[in-house]
Amino acid sequence: MDTNVLSKKLIYINSSNVDESKFLGNSYEFSYDILDAIRDVVYIKLMKTEVILNPSTANVQDGDPIYVSLKKYDRLFVNKNGGNMKVFEVIPLNISDKYGLGAVPNQNVMFKTEYTTTGCSINDTNTYVLDPIEPNLKRFDIQLLDKNFNNIPKSSIKCFTLTLCVYSSKKKLTMS
Image (cartoon, rainbow, N blue to C red; front, side):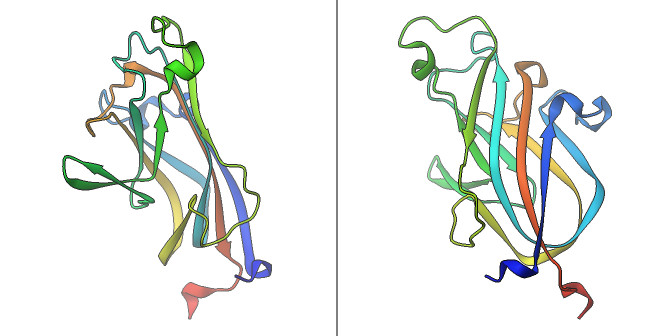
């Protein structure tokens, strides 16, 4: 990959800053509009995902996953009941790692997945390769799903953040 012909933009999505009208109903599903559209996107690299929730009131158990769906961009395949489901990321809720095997805390707790690689490689598992390229990226549609791939209620999660690095080609690929 010739990194001299790529531009990169860091996208930080914080659900606390999303207008209430962007949420769809009572589920944790919303659209995040990018201020300036990004042309000729070739890669989307996942940097970090975080979710803040109260395990006691969110109806989750130790080890449950939260699946992050970034519509149109499926990076992972998850085997569920003999079938493959497509998601962008999985956030494991490892409560016992934070608090031991005792009672589940009745407070807000942050769970995160963070990737520390600094370069971009198509062989990197946290890099999604767009094929075909995205000629005009204007927004991300995000949905959080529980262990059964059901929508998570908006009231169950205090905050969700997602940090992405979007790589676009400096060459005019969509003009040829």
